[in-house]
Length: 199
Image (cartoon, rainbow, N blue to C red; front, side, top):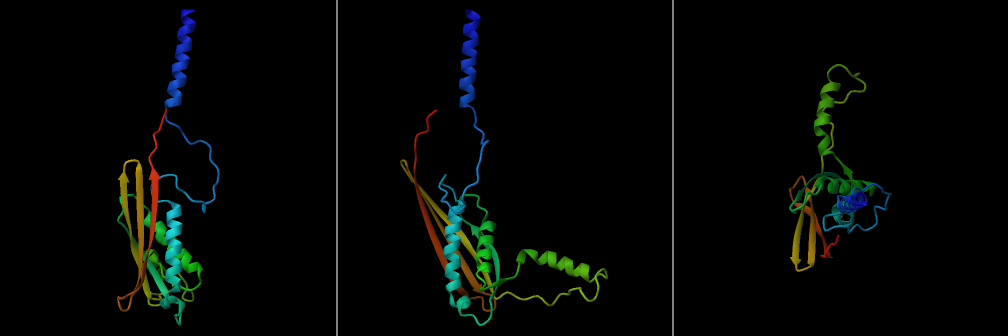
């Protein structure tokens, strides 16, 4: 009986310890990326989608694009992250570029591809490529505008209440004059309540 009691206690302790241990996410399913994501108080894909949509719609309505006599050439550069979070700002600017491109109202030059293009010029002019098909420097199209910006945040906590505020600001600068042709910002604020977590 003593052995049986010890075995029962050991099994119970094992069960309790196992249930209190770290949990692994072992079962998943696809979800709608358009559905709001408020799982935590961090910058989310929903925040990015909302902010980018507003910025792109505003930019496309500006005279520099909507009334342009020829399709403007744009270069998307950097987005400064002034928040306390680690946020992939490149992903935000990629979404801006794709949405603008899909409008059919602007075209883009790729800053990130410049080194690759330069290396390809060197290769094509090394004698390895036929004269009929090789490309040489001097024929690229220059950008008319540069788009860059900044992401800011303010976090406030009072008691069990928490407020997270984001502001995405974008600028479109005329490359010839250096004058900002368009600028706008999108504000997002999310509120949370702290709850006690039991075992």
